[in-house]
Amino acid sequence: MENKNIILTGDRPTGRLHLGHYVGSLKRRVELQNSGKFDEINILIADDQALTDNADNPGKIRDNIVNVVLDYLSVGIDPSKTTICVQSALPALHALTFYYLNMVTTARLSRNPTVKAEIQMRGFAEEGLPAGFFTYPVSQAADITAFDATVVPVGEDQLPMLEQAREIVEKFNRIYGETLVLPKAMIPENETQRRLPGVDGKAKMSKSLGNCIYLSDDAKTIKKQVNGKMYTDPTHIQITDPGHTEGNVVFTYLDALCTNDHFAEFLPDYSCLEEMKEHYRRGGLGDGTCKKFLINVLESTLSPIRAERAKWEADIDAVYDIIREGTAAAVEKTNATLARVRKAMRIDYFVDRSIVGEWNDLLKKAKQ
Ligand code: TRP
Image (tube, rainbow, N blue to C red; front, side, top):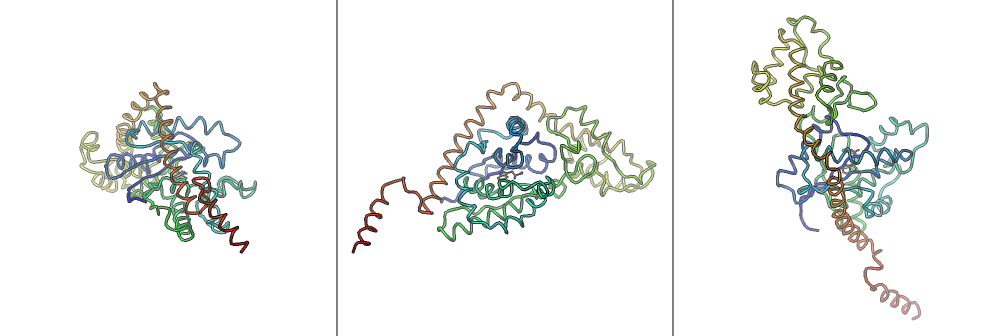
């Protein structure tokens, strides 16, 4: 194994990506892509993983592949620098998953906090738990190791997946010799970026709660979400009342998104967010002004993304070719890892005929 810096990350194509994905992960991916510090960057559209809890609705996954690719391209993922590929078209991942399933116990899988939470959320505890869903952390370990990933940029909720993948790698290497690369998680530094709440202040943006701002939303929708759904500080009744910025969604979003340049452009009364917050706490700064500033910040973040999206939407043939070519490259890469794994496990029978000699020796010895 060479010492390369390789990124692999991915998303389940179950819906359009939203602002939470953007601040928590997409923005960082583009920065990493453009940093020049990585030998390889791969993004996996995890349609097989999405099927583990959507087996009855494959159409939803099929439809959302294009939405997710458009979201990637519109935020600045550049297919000349980043390989975008589709999981289901990478047979090596299926084979690796099958071998890695032997590296974990069901007890260990049951303890995975992310899976536990998701089982609750989906009602699988009552309805019955699909075995594929239960074991998806193993398939995710296959994703990560198949690309020889050293760095896996993910949201905080994915840390248990990385831990599980690392355990699988360590166990595999212990049994079969140094074969797999040990990956590391990379999570956002800024705490509000790690977990951007919904516009209603609920813990997470979620389609079913209607509290998302999608990357593809138009200006009118964004304005409506901010003005209609974001609460500020219920004790801040008169403008002159002192206000609270903690737990105030408008400020949480500003924490995640705004820069000093935004102040220079849209709210030059302040030079930075801290100054604005101090004024709000002191009293004298109205919620309307704060929301208007936030809408400006959101618009300046999202309007270039929207414009880029429109360009790609007009050429879906090109979008198709991007993932077709990315997937073809990923097939090569992941097949090479599978070959290495099979060799380490000594199940590479048909690579050459060397086992014929071994078998002959064995039979000869048995006769002696
Ligand atoms: N489980 C990830 C999520 O829900 C998606 C994913 C699949 C992934 N395979 C991956 C993330 C490999 C990182 C690396 O967001």
